[in-house]
Length: 105
Image 1 (cartoon, one colour):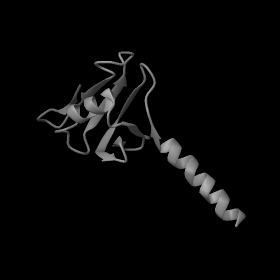
Image 2 (cartoon, rainbow, N blue to C red):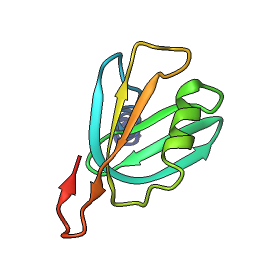
Image 3 (tube, rainbow, N blue to C red):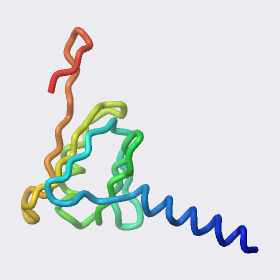
């Protein structure tokens, strides 16, 4: 029974570390793996990084919905948290690929 409790505590720790929100002026750059809306939360899944989660009714969720609507999985993106909590709490940058296959920012 003690092993089950320890495993459950490790599971909870991993779950809390795998979903996060950015602090003011913090940016994450990663490969976009998709967006999920569930349990009154919007979660952006990123490769090799923690997922970002915000309440569905938040300005952050509105920005993420709008900016990531047409972004394909596998695309490199950057998400920057600003200190503007009302209109533009997040800035989203999507890296486009040039015709020759190289990235342009």
